[in-house]
Length: 468
Ligand code: NAD
Image 1 (tube, rainbow, N blue to C red):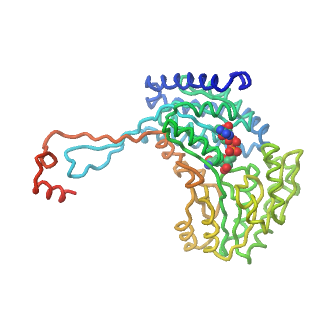
Image 2 (cartoon, rainbow, N blue to C red):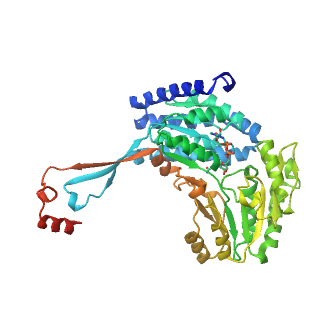
Image 3 (tube, helix red, strand yellow):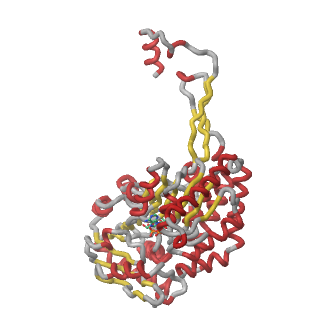
């Protein structure tokens, strides 16, 4: 495809209208409905990832200096697991789901039939640029849809790779990739889709939802937010520090569900910070900015943004930012300015404010004072604390005594609530997200009591009330 420079906005819109029309024709032809076709596309996607393991790793290294192990951990392993899971269960998910019919409505059978929605637009983000673009495609395929993928332009190598590979492996009649930035995404969003699935920040999420509203198109918005890690006084500090340190260092903290900040009581704060320092040292050595096991910040704009966050508190660990490699040491901040962006906005980098809160009540109140997070973590040995945390904190997902690992369970729905997102996917939640759950009732002809038909009477009303 030619660059935007060569085409104006109306040409782009026209080109994409043609693309959507073509995919809708495919959808209307019924090609995507048979389970065999869906399974063949999931197999093709698996083959695409297997055959291209090394070029995928190269693209992610070029975009984010992503270490090979993190390519597996954060990108391909999740995709393989979701593909395997969907392939094994697609028949069951697609099967009509029988539901009970009340006595009043007898004789009848009732069921729910999952219908594919049609043609979906999937807009990916840059931090896990392969996984976040392809993972929504898995349930889109399983549910029998066509789709256009728009990878993030912020990671151009991976975007180009997706654009090259998808048409080589998947059915071109049903799937396409459009590369580009704001003009291309805007022109895509102007089209009439049957679903728009967006991953990224909330501000663009609002743009996506506004555009979708024009056609009353349903959206899934996978957004971010400030995911807290609460460490209570019963928590085992060594494993707590190890897991939080891992969660903040993975992809240099550029993970939507990374622990954003830590809440801990004053009497454990010092020991936790010491333990974090020793865990990072064990993982990344004395100079993380030169470690091959540590990803870079994606670009200069984000590098400068994160480097400025370090100024907004007292550095307790790390603090070094190397513009050459665009790496920033895992950094603990204490006593941050509560009104500064490090505490008001999602950090999305390897900076970890550690804040004192007296106890679990005050920690929960602290989190609840902000927007509902995408995920929340509690480190504790107390069952009562766990129950209180689960009951009192609204957020997308929770992990007790670890961070982020719930992502490895395909049947746990993934997605935010409130400002952290709309709608969930992974496993069956994803299949249902890309389906319309059509209600189907089939009535028998006999008996056909006159109770609901006019002429009405007191007796019929009484009977109705009794049935109700
Ligand atoms: P991004 O810059 O890659 O943008 C996401 C997509 O939106 C891109 O495809 C981009 O082309 C498009 N876009 C950008 N500006 C646009 C505009 N004005 N109009 C239309 N489209 C536009 O990603 P980002 O927003 O920097 O991503 C970071 C955010 O994403 C963080 O808040 C993070 O927490 C969140 N995130 C959420 C998840 C999740 O699964 N919930 C995953 C990763 C990232």
